[in-house]
Every structure is written in structure tokens, then in C-alpha cells.
Image 1 (cartoon, rainbow, N blue to C red):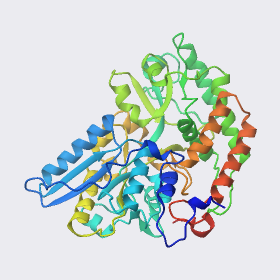
Image 2: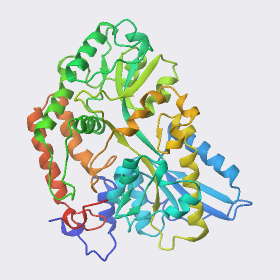
Image 3: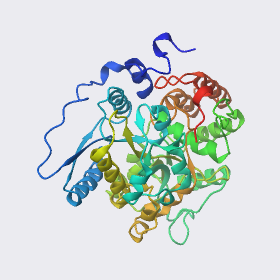
Image 4: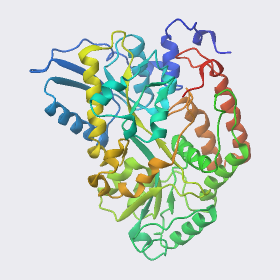
Length: 457
């Protein structure tokens, strides 16, 4: 049973404490500063008759690409003013978005990681998309990967419009590996299909590695990244977390132990150095690094001779960890009319014009973009586009998703195994215990238990 100050009856809105706990994972409320929420709208820009307030979490190169797409939309749609705001990535963003939706001060359009949507109390803190309006502006279900679209549907309604998937990749240096026999005639990494083959490849690559550099960048002490790697390889083994109704834990500790032992071996065999600056080492000549696709601009800047593939299918099945940036409609009591239609129009436009977004390494969710000649010419993006067809995702439960409670609970456990402070078998059992505890908890943002409302379409 939950703490009294986190419980509420089903007919009442979530409290401020509940929202801070669930939206921010395990964050502390006082550090976020809510002064920016709910401020009055400015006068409409000259010539515009509709405004769309849009919150996102994109900074750096992604931020520049998003701004460029918004500017293109503004140019083509002078009657719609887009008032965009970039908030701090992670828990602060989700906390502010939840508070704004609960207080009826939400923006007209927002961005969320798809894995967080289930826990955001769809129908209370999020409004469903009007699929008819989306189709009017050129976005159709049949233009998306079926599994990706399915993840966006809850209780039969579409609550997220996927913009992309972003995945963990195996980056490799062609120039470093040129004399190792690990590349094919086209200069691409020869596929491996077992753990033995993978460690043989690392052994060979280590011979070509400069002194002082690691063979594989692994982010061994990063709880989020190590959890993502676990998700990928556990999926390769066919591992599950819960039954279809999300009422029972089905986590396989034997398969989990296999994955944890595999990750640990990179350290014990000397291929990965704890605490190393992985991206920097790759730029300096390390032959491999496992990084998110957002590292493409980082590695392309120095003009490295490199490639990138999905994570190696060492357990026989293709599966790479994937998340998705998706557009959402934060709840508004009076949602509708011209502003709501403009929000649909903006999201549909960006999804269909994601070629620029792909330049940042992301795989566009819109399949016509993926099949376009322009996308096929992108390198290394075209080399790892197949990751769209074998996404390894966190379970579809309220406590999952990027920076969510699940990652905060089990991520440090994966790190402890990889770094050697705990044995893989013991960690696997602890992970199952954490999953059991989380499944029994209520979602503080909607008050329903997993048994009462955990199953989603």
C-alpha cells in the first residue's frame, strides 16, 4: 500500500506531491522552479491569427535542427505563430509538464519520450490525438512502423505521435580496423552472431588499438546507458518483464544473469576502462564505442572514417535498445478549435519533414522519409536504419521510460554488476525484486494499481 500522502480517490486530480514524485522519477521538488508555468500569452505576431505554444526538451544540435524545422513551418504557415520554449532535459521537464497539465496551464503541444507516455495518466494529463485531423495534414498510421505506432496507443486512443526512434549503436573506426580482417570489402563491420565471435573481434581489434586507449567504450558507470544495454541484450534472449496484463512478474533471472555476465566480461577482459571518456577516446583512435545515435554529429565533426551498426546480435536475435521522441497534447480543459487544429498541423508537418532531424542521427518515424533517396544517402544513418525493425524497448508500464523510476531503480544494479561490486546472479535476483515492488505500486498520477488499470493496448 502506498504512503497516505500519495494516495487519492479516482475522481480527484493528482496532487502536487504526486506529480513531482511520478513525473520526475525520484526527483526533489524544490530544485525545479515553477515560475515559468502558466504565464499569460503575448500578443499575436503580426499577420498571425492563431498561436501554438510548444514545449520541448531539445538542446545542442537537436535544438538547432528543431528550430530550423519550426522556422520552415512558420514560413509556409504565416497565419500560425509558434511560440516554442526549450526546457531542461529529464526530470525537470516532465515535472513542469505534469504540473502545467494538472493546473490547466499546459502548452498546446509538447514532446515526450514514448516510454513515459503510459505513466503520464493519458486522459488526465494528456489528451488523445484526433487521427482524422492528422490524416487531413498527411499523417497516417500506415506510414509508421506498426510496433512503434502500437506503443503510442493506450486504451484504443493515440496519445503520442512518434517523431523518431533513437537507438544505441556500435560505432567503429574503419581506419583503425583496416588491417584487422574485421571489415568486409565495402569497409563495413563483419557481422557477429555470438558472444564468442564478439570477444574474438575485440581481441583482434585490441591489437590495432593505440596504447592507453580502450578497445570498446561502454559507459560502464552510467546507470541509464547500462540499463539500455541490458534491455537490448535481454530482448535478444527473448526475455520478458511482465505478463500481457501487467499483473505478474515474468522476469527471467537466468537470462538476466547471462546478459550481466556478458557486460561484465568487457571489463574483466580489459576491453573497457571504467570511467573513461568514451566519445573522446573514440575520436582519439579507440576502435569501438557503444553510443546513442545522437553521437553522429559529434563523430562527423572531426571527419572520422567511421561506421555505425545496431548493437551486435550476440545472443542470436537482432535487438537494439530504442526510445522515441514523440509529440503529445498536454491536457487542456478547453482543448479544441483553431489552436488545437494548428497544433495537429505543426506536429504533422515536423514528422513529415524530418530529413533535417535525421542529420542529427535520429531515425525518422515517418517511413516515407526513411525510404526517400535523400535519407538513403546519409552516412552512417543508412547503415543502421534497420534498427527500426528490431526495437528493444522497456516494458509498457507507468514507471518505465527515459529517466523514469524503473531506470533509477535497476540501472545502478546493472552498473554494480558491470563494475564488479556485485555478482551477476545476485544482481539478477535484486532486479526481479525491484520489478515486483514497482508493479505493486500505484501510479501517483492516476491512482490506479497495475491490476486495476495496468493493461494497455
